[in-house]
Length: 394
Image (cartoon, rainbow, N blue to C red; front, side, top):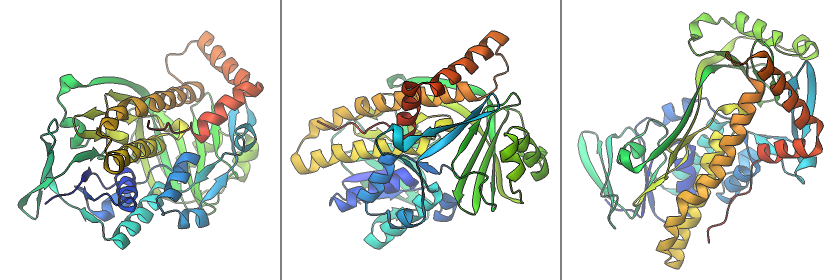
């Protein structure tokens, strides 16, 4: 079996890359170890940067997003008991974010790939990228008990933090940067109306809280909890009571509660691997970097990786510019580290850390107050939140 680009992972980044390549006439095959139903069952991000929205439109998969997604021109920060509005549109010259769930993005991409006749192999086992430093790399895998060899020009590892792509690179060829936070996010999905028209990020002495949404009738709420907490210890009632406690009274009083339809705890970590390329294997998205969800950057960073890799592969196949592949890691990492910084800053400012003394707490409160009280500070927050520009491939 042969193709030009082998893509490992049928999550949103792998599917988006496959869709863009297909539209450009570059053949690709996607390999996924899980079933389509499992992939769609993942409850993840829902805030799309302007750049990702534009990329989905470029890929021709934005009709439902544009019809059903919620454009948000701002969001709220809550600290010291006060609500502070960040006007994204005004501060960034008209840019905004789109509220549209990752599950829906994935569904749209799956539909588009099926309509285009793209090949995706689900439920594959023992995926193994090989000959990465040669001009003819390949990926072997097992399907229905048979071993298949997929020959290709390039391999895109879009298979997440625990995937085989990064594990296929010799450990001594990579440098890892990591920070693990001493808490996680307890998330609840519920069919209730949002408590606010825009997202609310709340700092409280008991811990951080986030009021988000997926639609006008479906909400996604989060609470900071200890790293050792267990989901089964949190009844719906306990969750709602704690959430209300961490919000200003005017929000808590109008919150509509209900039965949860999904509840989970996600640990928080910052992680970056350098470089993001080994021979003809490229790491994309969570395979190369993880951010705390506080800044809404995880899925969006994967999209910017996809955009960069797509532009490079177009130069390779349309212009014969094989030298362009050497730009991938450097271009991606410049944007990634800026997003890591913003996510770290948001996490540091809004969460309660167990080891912060009284001085440190006052400094944190003062920094938030300074940034929100300054036009330059609000602009910095806004331009990072809507997403920094994608860098061009030379």
